[in-house]
Amino acid sequence: MSIDSQITSAGDLPPVSELPVQKELPDPFVTLDGRKITTPEEWNEIRRPELLELFSHYMYGYSPEEVEVKFTEDAPPTEVLNGKAILKQIAISFPQLKSENAPQIHLALFLPNQPDHKSPVFLAVNKCGNHTVIPDEAILTFPTTNLHSYCDNPEKGDRGAQLDYWCLEYLIDRGYGFATCHVNNIDPDTNDFTDGVHPHFKDIKGPVESHWGTIAAWAWGLHRCVDYLLTDEQVNPECIAVTGHSRRGKTALWAAATDERIALCIPHQSGTGGMALSRNNDQETVKRINDVFPHWFNDTFTQFNDNEAQIPFDQHLLVALVAPRPLMETSGLKDVWANYDSSIKGIREADQVYKFLGAEGIKGDGIINGGPVTAENVGNLAQYRLDTKHVLELDYWKGILDFADLQFKTK
Ligand code: GCU
Image (cartoon, rainbow, N blue to C red):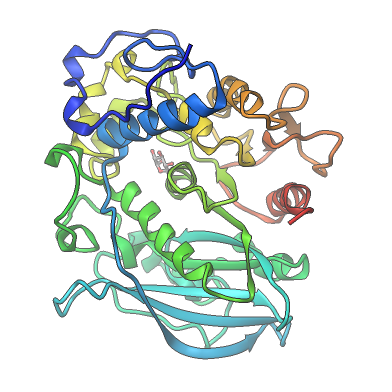
């Protein structure tokens, strides 16, 4: 059966009250109006665009589409980590914004010090500032409003405070670059849209209650960083990976789902609104996340509080939007809030889309319990588990880079 390519537009989408009640996870291969997807072409031309529209409209929010970016050096490139790495600091600005307080994204890009080489790069937003990655005075700091209270604590927010979290030297030693910017450059993490990017971009699709929340804004900021990375001749344009922890893991997943220039995704302990399903989530419910963090998703999403069965998708379909690109969720067995049990259900559901699109998808049961990630135990979709709490540390990076090595080996 052939189906006409018909991308749903925001105006065509029903109000939440008219959406069908689906207690089971929505079928990846059935469109909102009940049509069956039977070929990869139909997936790409019909279902994928429809899902992007549904997730934007009802959950994360629509972001600005056309945006001009300008790159300038915040500082000349300099050596760090005793000459093992080069640090480039780039300001990403938006020429169409004329106001004095127009936002800028300050990207710190650390690359293996190999001038004629193109390195794979991990990209992530950070919580407290670029200077927390390593204790090096060369890393610039920028004034901000609404700094997260956690970062006010000198132990958390100081130079190099996240040394054992990002493990930069380990990444560099394994041949990877790392690019990062502070979330506050894009949008401070408060229920207040008067700062950050939101007030500056007016031309946004869809009704105002469907406009971008903070997570969509952070993901959009990652896309602007990708715009830069693709211009840097020391970056391998086919090997740009995104990651992020917890709320920033939700961000990495939404960023990868919405931008096919991102080649690999590692959502780390991302939980509700990330890899964990909204349906039957016995840890963080949709209502709880909307009540405590009303700014993360769009306003329409609050209509699914205690009403998950009317969500016309679930998070397995966000993984499906990343397909056929590699994705490995990393989770901690002692992390009692991010719901790794729920995520693996979603991963197994999404696997059918990976295989349908000709990718390897999961191997075995899809779970890797610590240790090395090898061609024997992983396909290109997996969950990697370590016996930790809600943290990011070296053992995660070992698994992550093993996975990335396997996925990038031909690029
Ligand atoms: C809260 C929130 C989670 C989130 C986490 C984090 O616990 O409920 O959804 O993932 O913060 O970002 O650390």
